[in-house]
Image (cartoon, rainbow, N blue to C red):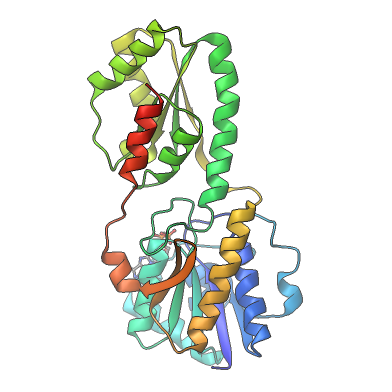
Length: 319
Ligand code: ADP
């Protein structure tokens, strides 16, 4: 293999730049040429592809977002779109591709591999919902952004003795809600992976009131539904003044944490090693602090799981 490509696709996440940098620098270290594809699969179809040098990825390791930009591309879901992409890759003499993105992007990587084009997936999403890795690139940064926001909300919640409902991102996964809720001592955490009983929640809030708690923080994962609807229910059932904050896209931005930068550097470099090793259709990950890789198809067929012991712990600690 002499020439590889790299793209970012789907939702951006902090640390994607560090991953791009690792792919480019590791490839050049191994005397490969490396091309950056702009705008994800859309750029692949359009041939929006440029040669990257060592300096192309200078001064980006600490920046959020992705210097290669990202896009969602419906055309790539069709056979014609995929064939156009492969024509472009052939035109540029690219022999292997690293796709940094979430599970949608992985479906695209799988398609390319099935058409005979070696592709490796690097998990980049704040949702932490990619099977085959303990952590995805961007999760830790988003977690810290959420914690910072909740800390600030807590100050005003205490001052006004209010109940706050905070809706956090995560799509169908509750990881961001669970980790931030545990880190912030939230009274209640609602995640899609665990059933909840409104009566229990009310009883928990009442117990807190009775022992003189000044405020309550309830974290709602977006996969559960609207934070506003949940806030209305609490207000109706408890006659408690409730405020709702939807944190939204601030969770996707910001300078990546040290953890995400290191993770992105390790995973990006590993993807290059795997391509050089003749691997295709695999996703890189980290499990118990070891770099691992799994077949993309097998990983995508697994259901996302959450640490339910941690969920139980969050309930035990917020009695
Ligand atoms: P994410 O990668 O963050 O999960 P999306 O689900 O939007 O984001 O997927 C990003 C892109 O990956 C899509 O816009 C599309 O181009 C490509 N993609 C998603 N699903 C498929 C599929 N089944 N086949 C081919 N490409 C896909």
